[in-house]
Length: 279
Image 1 (cartoon, rainbow, N blue to C red):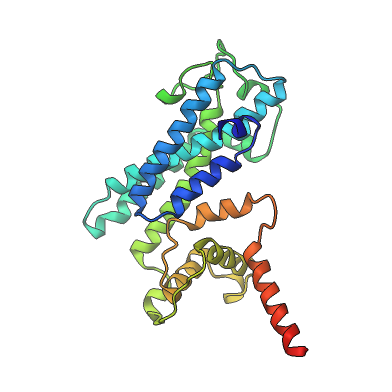
Image 2 (tube, rainbow, N blue to C red):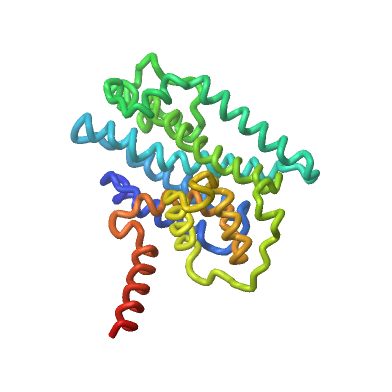
């Protein structure tokens, strides 16, 4: 896996992570396994970096801007998820406040680093050599490094900060889902869909279908929210997608070929049926 990552590919890493997430177990158990896995990958990468010289400045920038932060972000994200869930109050009325407190902390982080986030979101590159190459005596090092990322031979001034940005964006989406579940705000909780149907294909197939319907704006003239559509499918087909949908969408988006494989399978099956009926 490390060899693949060093060649600027995250495919093996994401595949291994998806195996953990799609295995049996509750969200806390999966978070613990993801932390162990991602920490091990980061440690191996750091050992490699201590003795590695990149062939070009651009290779170094690519690694510290596009590769390592995405790995480190998963470590940060699942550490945050574990802390969030293991400190969740038993009192239902206090759970939303617990989630809202974390949302406030994320917003404070956004405000503190708004200029850097603007730089990343605008896809700017003019400061990349400063932010994403190893400069041992640079005056721009941020002062809140975590222990796993302190050695200046294995990190740059901003690769960890970028990892935090990526992690907190994903965390914010999950918190919204948690709050929505607690408030039971979507219409499906009022209608109480009754069905004996069970979804027996892969969860990621259903998520692919949900995203396609959402992006096609087929519900409520395009006004329906993704989480509301998701809840309807969860209730209708007796399946829980709560801790899978955002992660699985990233997996779908990162597919190198046949990105919408399930939708293509549906089209093939229907076209085949129509063809057989005509003949």
